[in-house]
Image (tube, rainbow, N blue to C red; front, side, top):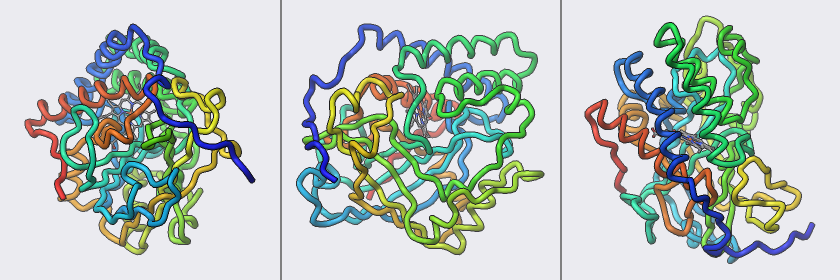
Length: 358
Ligand code: HEM
């Protein structure tokens, strides 16, 4: 099969809106309600979204050698072997029973990368943040902010802190939109059967600069150990942290491998930059492997690693190389929103965020 050639990156592929500062302020105000509510609830600050972690893994990120020129860009320009962390999470800002059916996320931190940094990006790390679906239902940040605000406002009328958090969370879920969750599902804690997050495929959803080109990213399980976990049901009854327990059992006995893949942009209309609700179809723009994430068997809920990564680190699409600049309005707004949430955690917990060194 032949594909159109990849389109070049240029400054003018983004279309800035006049009201992006107001949009960010509105999102942060909504997040403040969640952050403050959950802080009171748990006695410590947690992420404004993706608060619950299921596993913290450590492994190596190996960039393939001899990639064709169009794929040998940025971090992937030359072969390499980097230490990496992976945090597996669920999207609400509240820490819920695993019986609630929700989308999953992963955050990957590649350590010790060389090259020009994004503005404000400390250290020498490259973060990738992904979820287990290819699109965001809000096409742009303004629409995301509007639904978040509307639903977050119900917090004030809620009867208890816990209910308040759940209402806001429903808003976050609806707005993040990777699911069509009805409130009754959350209320009844009785969603669809849960599956093992180790068998899922994760997407960047939004586009990024890829050196001379533009791409979306994907992390796909490869090798029997992971692929046979695809769709495997997790029994949650009586186990509020069933997913964490399942992954811990799995990871004690398997060496896990994921392919890190890039999808180069090839058609300006069919693969837009500013609308995160449009899937870039694989039959028009294929995903191709450029690196492997290898995670040897280990304790996926090791107390020291959990403290270091879950509590004292942050992951952001804006932590990384200038050659992988996040693109589009959703990504532009994410810069200030992720910083805001991490600043709240650092201040409330009295511990600054750490970027790991080599
Ligand atoms: C305007 C849109 C978005 C906003 C405002 C937003 C906001 C946030 C915030 C505040 C955090 C917590 C940061 C921290 O405390 O360290 C977070 C984490 C996360 N977000 Fe987003 N997000 C947006 C879009 C997306 C999209 C499109 C994806 C899909 C890839 C995504 C996936 C995730 C994941 C997986 C995490 C967990 C990161 C971790 O493990 O630390 N978000 N988001």
